[in-house]
Length: 320
Image: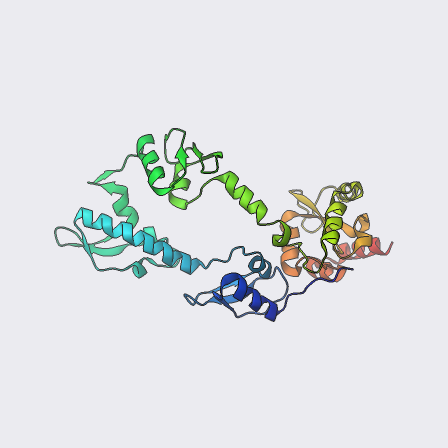
């Protein structure tokens, strides 16, 4: 059985220091690599949760409050410039645009118009209209926006409307389609670059299956075991036996084969159908969030399942 490096409060704190540059301080207790742990952001004081494995892999390390503060600062610059163009005066600051559950561009703040009347305006209000008339987007105007705000990207399709897909070319040469609203307002960019980046973020040391205590030869043997014909047959046998249906919730959507005793730690049970059970993706993810990856056992599975009849069936199979 493979010895896996277990998580502890001390290890999590070390990862927070090295992977987030001491941005967070641990508040909650560490249970396993997937169970969220409460932390506090040292920059803004916000309490939030981070999964140990995500910290190790440098995934989802951002603080929503810090992101909102940064976005508010950018919005403030464009907002105030536009207000000056329209002849408004104001006294608000970028901090006034940081409101829970509201994006900075939609926060209304008091301003004084040319007649000296106090009115409430948001960034979206003043940027949507010019001289009382809606701004009309077309291919030429949107292409100019892309050139100015997304360096390296090119609009190669036609702009028809804000919610109809058009075609772009990214700096790496990928052609992709996206609706202009998402490209302009949400910051989304090349879908192929995102796919490649996501794939790279889950390989090698960044994978949640990665075990620092294993040698390269052991890792290679583990990868080959997953490609072995016996493993493919094992999956087919388990799916057929369980009728491609989740044994926990009876859903037939996205069935996956779960190892009761984990694949990496219990070599002798890797391709034994009695050690497999079908779970839907949601149930499979839920189990591993609670009990992590690497050294999963029957005891963990029975604790998570809480179904006496199915637990008895699984135990009988493993004893057979």
